[in-house]
Image 1: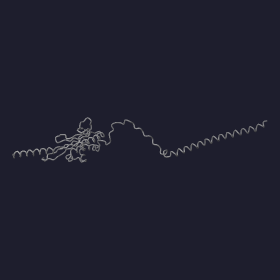
Image 2 (image 1 turned 60 degrees about the vertical axis):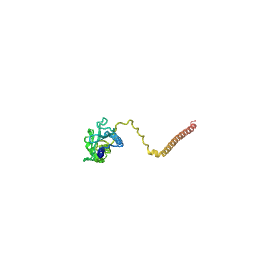
Image 3 (image 1 turned 90 degrees about the horizontal axis):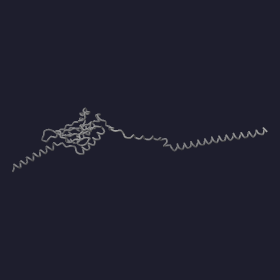
Image 4 (image 1 turned 90 degrees about the vertical axis):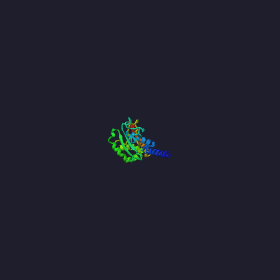
Amino acid sequence: MWVGIAAMVVVAILVAAVLTDSESTTIPPPTATERNDTVAILRDAAERQGICYGWHLQERYGDVVSAGSNLGDGVLVAGHPRCPRWLQVTATVVYTAESSESEDSAVVTVKGSPEFDDDARDLTAGLSRFGLTEAAFVEEPGWAVTRAAVSLALLVVENGAASPEPMVTTAPTEVPTPLPAAGNDLWRDRSGWLIGAAGLLLIAVLLVVVGLVQRRRGGAAVANGQGAGVTSRRKPGRV
């Protein structure tokens, strides 16, 4: 009886030890919210810069824990036909059992298409400026790897490998209509005075014209009267 009880206790201890070691070495992936938010941010960066961005989180022996990119959750950019230019953060996180003397560790690298070969080392080193150190990847590997993918877009601009301005992919379909010419403030502010002055000027011109016409008519009448008087005076002399 006692032997049976002792055997059951030993088995329970072994099972508990196995379960504890198994749970302690499991790499937690990013949450669904972290993955969805990261995909949206990477999609915007890819549209602006023409570069695909992604993340790849794996365990000690290369087992994939989480992967994704601007193309979607679970879609890798390396070698993808839609991504001739691409960058990807790859993190290998190793959790050791509590009974092991080894410590947890993480190895982070940035890989990309051939044109980024010279920038990969600087981009990897630049992640630490965002708090994405080895300790951060060990503590929260899911959050760290998605955060690193987002940070790549900033580091690429900083290194001069991409422009912060949006890429122009198509020409505008319609030519914008030019704005109408701006009016003159002199006319808007003094329109009443100018209209009144124009009216007075017109009246003055009419008065001058009327005066000239009347003067011309009066001169003609005087000339006609003088001619008639001379004729009447000359007629008796001839008889």
